[in-house]
Each structure stands twice: as C-alpha cells, then as structure tokens.
Length: 329
Image 1 (cartoon, rainbow, N blue to C red):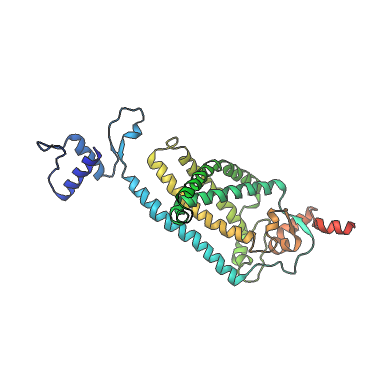
Image 2 (image 1 turned 90 degrees about the vertical axis):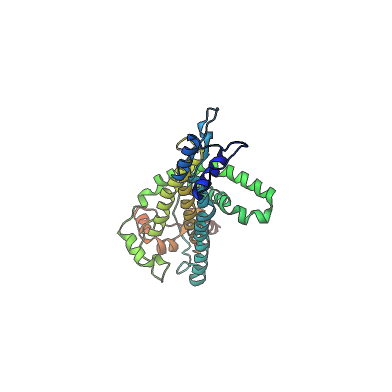
C-alpha cells in the first residue's frame, strides 16, 4: 500500500497517468488512495489498517520524521561540532595568551574551608554522571564518523550498547544531584550588584584586576544556573525519550529529542570551560572540590567578600594538615 501511495503521488505531481499495480484493467484510485495522497500533500501522517491492538503500528508514513532525520544527521552534527570544537579552540587560545592563572603572592600556607564533604560528594556525583552522559550522547551523534572507523564495528557496537544503558540509568542520579545542588547553593547564587561590577572588570580573566566577589562570582553563578535550569530541561526531555509514548506522541518525542540534543551539546561546551578553569587553568582551584580546603591567598584573590564573611563568623583560616604534623614533631 505504501509503494502504491507514493507512486500515485509521484504520478499526480508529474501530471502522468495513474499507474496500474496489477495485470489486466488499470485500477482507478480509491477513496482511500485519494485520502492518503491528500494527507501526504498537507504534511500529515498516512495511516493503514491493522488487526493488532497497538494502533501506532498503523502509521505508514510520518512526514515529520524526514525533518527530524535531517536535523539529527545534519543540523545537530554542525551545531555540536561548532560548539564543542569551538570551545576547545577558544580555551587553547586563552591558555596560550593568559597561561595558568597563579596565586598572587604565592600560597599563604593556611587554608579555609570552601566546601564540606556532602557538597563535594554531590558535586562529583553530578559531574561524573554528566561526563558519562555527555560521552555516550556524543557517541550517538558523532560515533559513526569518529569512533567506528578507529575501533571497528564489533567494538563500536559494544561501546554504543553499554553507553546507551549508562545514558538511560545515570539520568536518575544526575537529576537527584541537581535537586541537591539547587537546595545547597541557591542562596549563594542569587545575582546582585557585585556580579555586574565583576563582569565589567572582566572577572579577573581579562586584565589584572581582581574584582570583589562573594562565595560565588558572576561566572560561577552563570555555571550554576546553566547546570540547574539547563540540566532540568535536558532531564525532562530525556525522560520523554526513555519512556517512549508514555508522556507524549511521536511528534512530541521528536521535539524532545531536538531540545535535548541541542541543549546538551551547548552545556557540554560550557562545562569544558568550567572544567578547564577548575583544574589546569587556575592554581589552587582544584582543591575546592578535592580536599574542600583552599589556600587563603587564593580565596582572598578570587572571593574576598566571602573570606571576610567567614572571618566575621569565626571560621578563620588554619594551617594545612601537613604543616600541623611538622610542627608537632
């Protein structure tokens, strides 16, 4: 029936006679054929008749599927490639120009607690889930072009299978971590006038100024809201795909995939910058999410207002554990 409908449509569009599909007398188009052709011309799905209970199987032609396929194979690949590769190129140029951001005056030899154990554990749960989700998601878009030629069909199939399994199940701890992150840090991530001054001064990344900042500067607040709000949209749209036809129909799932994939690749690009600054891009930054203790001079350089608040609360800096041990001897 599908071949017959497409042939009828092609014949009508070219002004040709209606083709015959059986030997003998040419067959006149039926009302069903005309309705199917009308559906195709207006961009609506073409349905057939089936005897099984699931009526979705009667959907013979779904024109919007061609648009979704073009998006997945062309548009998403371009957007994702430009976002991810562009960010990597930008970070490379930044490193060549700026270098590793040092602690001015060198380490103070005293530390101040920046994050407690629960905050760090939740951060790493979200971060590890995000990394696996990002890699497995990128594989769905670029794997056939990048990974398959390198590892071969069998290995690529195995990697893709387990990546898809991880992608589905890690969505749940990722979402839970976002909820905890919101509850833990929302009070310190409300934008204020200090953030505007921080942005005007280039955040200390442009030039040599070190603008005032509370516990989180404007850049970190931006990362926070991108992670929480963007992650929430990515999670909701992802659940639409994990549970097909449970929340919406095929058109809704195609829209969910478009939103999910575009927002995901943009978040990956942003997180690359976050990872760079938090590790190899800045002296002393990685300590915040490893030991939870940061050097006092680093804290004063990047979060001076927060240090003043902590000192006023009696949460002063202490010597690192190694220094205590040496003094005890």
